[in-house]
Every structure is written in structure tokens, then in C-alpha cells.
Image (cartoon, rainbow, N blue to C red; front, side):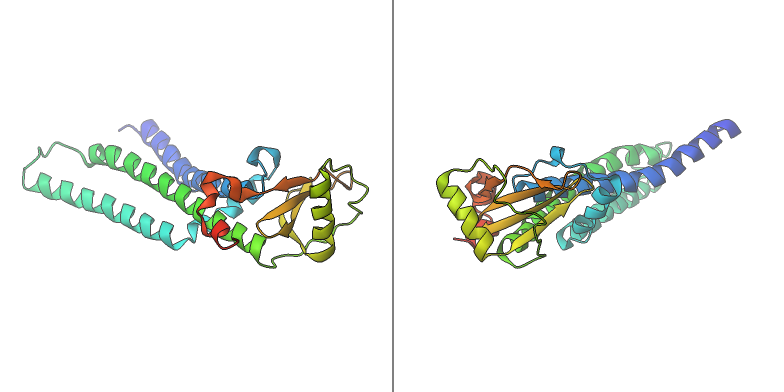
Length: 228
């Protein structure tokens, strides 16, 4: 390999070393936030979270014991494949001209695919656990800065009465905050009301009545079973 080609290869390798962990962190953070916010009827597309915030939420995934176990198994599998390849090449079971990079070109994409599946699975599980704690435990308390009675929340009579009861007898719990909006919930059992505060205008957006356990994906989870 000539010097210019080697320099280009070194630059690409250095870039991959920096970009790959960031890409994994971003994917893990997005996967976690998407699953977490769905428990509160918040779409991932309606929040404007900075890159640093998204990557920070990947901590919930990367510290998950099940994900760490899967990552160790995947790494051990790649190492085992490389050792088996070198052994077969030494014994001339396969031609000695076959390069290790040929095996890595197959093993690494497969390992990356399995890693992404592990990230998605762990993101969904940790999101369910964390949302369960917010719904059914005290969590972080959020105190409304302005009266919610003046808001045209467009709820029915029954839901309006439940909201009034919720605000007067229970605790408003913090969910997530972005530079422009903050989200909190007022909970009664396994149902609640999402309160969205627009920090720019210092006002509350229309209140949402939410019942995540009506969704098939959540119905059989511990999150919903424990509230029955």
C-alpha cells in the first residue's frame, strides 16, 4: 500500500473510531426515548432534544445487565470465529492465501446487527421500568407555575372532573424537559393527564388524557399488570 493510500486508510480508521461509539450512543438514546415517551403519549418527533441529551439517555441502555451480557457474547463470538479461522488456515483446511479481513467483513456486520437488536430490546425494557416508576411511585415532583383552570383543555365533563380531582389529591410528576417544553403527568391509577408547559410563552398546551395500558404492546407488561 502506498503512503497516500495508507494515510487515507489511517484517517478513515480514526474517523470510524470516533463516529462508531457516537452513532451507537445516538441510536440507543433514540430507541430509549421513543419507548419511554410512548408510555406518556408523547411522540419522539415532537420533542427537540439536543444531541447531548439523546446520547446521555443511552446510559440507561448501556448499563442494562441483559445488554452487557449480550455484548459479551457477541464479542466472544467474533473472537471465536477469528481464532477458528486462523486455526483452519494454519492446518491448511482453508487456503493460506485467505485473509482474515475476509472473515471480519462477514463477522463484523453480523455482530453490528445483533448489537442493534440488543440495544433495541434493552431500550424497550429499561424504558418500561423507568416509566413504571414514574407512574406508580413518587418520582420527581413538578409544581405548575400557572393555574391550569384557565386553560381550555377541551376535555369532556367526566375527564374534566377527574383532572380536577387529580390535581387536588395527587402529585404532579416530572417526565422530561427540553429547552422549549417540559412534560409532567398527574396520575390516577394507570390513567393520567399529560401537562405540557411551553417555557417560551410560559403557558400550558391542551391537556391530554392518557391510558397506555390500552395499547397491546403494554397490556401484558409489569407496568400495567401491577396497576390492575
